[in-house]
Length: 523
Image (tube, rainbow, N blue to C red; front, side, top):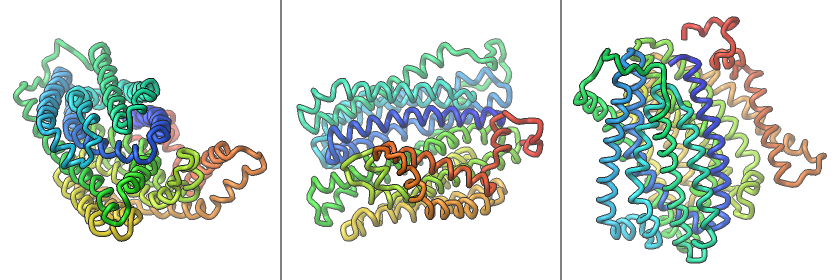
C-alpha cells in the first residue's frame, strides 16, 4: 500500500462516512421526533446488544482478512487473496447461525432478565434471523480493505443509510399507531434491512469487480486451506474475543445506567428519557467527527501490516505519528466547538429536547474518544490484541464503577467524568505499548501544546464568531450553521498558522505534490 492509497483510501471512507452520517443524523432526528426521548431510550437498549453480537462476530474476521490480504499482496501471492475472504465468509455465517439459534432458544430470559423491558421482545425477534447475513459483510469488507479498494465499502455505507431511512419514513405511520413497542421494532427492522443491503452491494462488487493483481494461473506462495483456516482463526479469535468482552462490559454499562438513575430517585419514564438524551441524542453528535478517526483506523490496520511484513519500520512510525496528529487536531477543534455552542447546536439538531447541558459536558470527551479509536487501530495493526483487551477492560471497569456507585447520588454528569478518566487511562496504556514496540517518538509539541493553544483562542473568541453574523439577520438555524462553518475554517487556519497542519505535507500525502517536498519520500 503506497502513501497515496493509504491516505486516499481513508479520505474516500471519510467522505462516504460523512454522507452516511449526515443521512443517519437526518434519520435520527426524524426518529427522535417520532418516538420521543422515552422511545429513544427504549431503542438504545437494543442497540448495544445488537452491536455486541455483530461486532463480536465481525471485527475479528474483518481485521484478519484485511491483514492477511495486505500481506499476501505485498508478497505477490495473489492466489491466496480470494481464498482468504471465502474462508472468512464461512466463519461468520456459521458463527452467526449458532448465535442466532442460541438466543432464539432463550429469548424470554434475554428480554426479561438482560434487557429488563418486555417491550423489546418484538425488536429482538426481528433482529435474530438477520444476524448471520449482517455478519457476512465483514469478510467482504476485510477483502476490500486489504486490496486497498475502499470504494465498494464506501458505497455500501451510503446505500445502507438510504435504505434504513426509506423504510422508516414509508412505514412509520402504521407502526407508530400500534404503540411505542412497534415503533422501536420498526427502527430495528430498518437497521437490519439496511445492513443486509450493505451486504448485497459488497457481494455484487466482490463477484464482478476485476483487479490487476488477480492471476488465476499463478500458484506462487499458495497456502493450503488448512493452514489458511488456522491463520485466520488464530488472528480473528483473539480480536473477536476482545471485542466480545469489551462489548459485554459496554452493554452492562449502558443497561445499568437507567437502573441506577431509578435508584437515585427518578421514575422509570424519566430514567429512559435521560438515558435517551445522553446515548441517543448527545453522544451521536459527539461521535459524528469520529468518522475521520474510524476511517484512518480502518486503513491503518492493513497499512501497518503490509509495512511490517516488508520490514519498513520508518513507514510504520510515520503513518502512526501522522494519524495521531490528525486525530488530536480533530479532537481539540470539536471539543472547542461543542463547548462553545452546546445549546445552539442541540437546538439546531434536536429542537425542544434540552440536551445542551449534556452536550457541553460530553464535549470534553472528544479528544480522548477520538484518540482511543485511532490507537485501537494501531494496536490491531501491530498484533497487540491481548494488551488492547487488558487496557480496554481496565477502562470499562472504571466506567462501570462510576455508573454503579456514583450515578444514584450525582446523576449522569459523574458518568461523563468517568468516561473521560477511563478513556485517558486507556490511551496512556496503549501509548506505552505502541512506543515500546515501534520506538516512535512522542511529538507533544504538535500533538498537544500547539493544538491546545489554538483551542484556548477559539474558546475566547467563540462568542465573537457567532456574533459576527448578527448583521445578516438570519434565522437561528442558518445563523448557527454559518457560525459552525466559520468556526471550523478559522480553527484549521490557526492550526496551519502555528504549524500543526502542514499543507505541503498534506498535498504530498495525497499524492498531489511530489517534486518539491522530498523529505517524506522515503515513507
